[in-house]
Image (cartoon, rainbow, N blue to C red; front, side, top):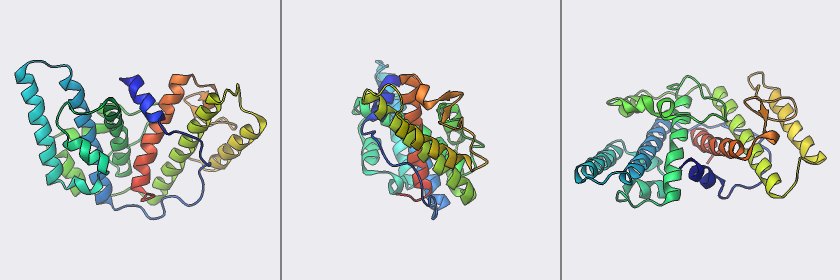
Length: 258
């Protein structure tokens, strides 16, 4: 499943311009962000149900899964989540259990990363792990797992200061750009960065390094843990791309950069 998820995140990934310019100048409302966080969490839960339905055979077990799906849909309607779901997400959430494709499960699984990222923008999550360390279920969804957790988060939603959102948004854009660029380089057959590419990467790293809060670099390249992106093994690079994409999508919503 993990390989499937990583491959799904690569679809459509290609080179793009380095991040820059004004980001997160007009954030979404806290209520919108909270509803989107809950919607992504519900989508991740629906993906879990889809995976579980393949593992059970007893009628009683299937009945329980269908009841959970019905409860999920009822709560989504009560919380008015349709307004913050994309059309394809809305369709998936309402599809009959067992009707998802493999790539749908991949999409739903990574919704958990987006949910946790948005909970960070609301101050519910204290911190996000580094970009090479995706959120696990406990980190991403625990605040929403308790009874009335979603209702409480929506009811008391407040965004972090806009400066925090701007820094996070810039960082996600930078890691997404760099991971896509590196994958494109390797697909082209280039053994290592040429001089022009190395200069472009170093320039972006130096620009980001001017922020005292950004330390994920060695002066010349971004770091995934202690490893430069240029030296990551293929699996780690794909994971970095997937995490960056999921967080970037979530932060774009929070920043209203859609």
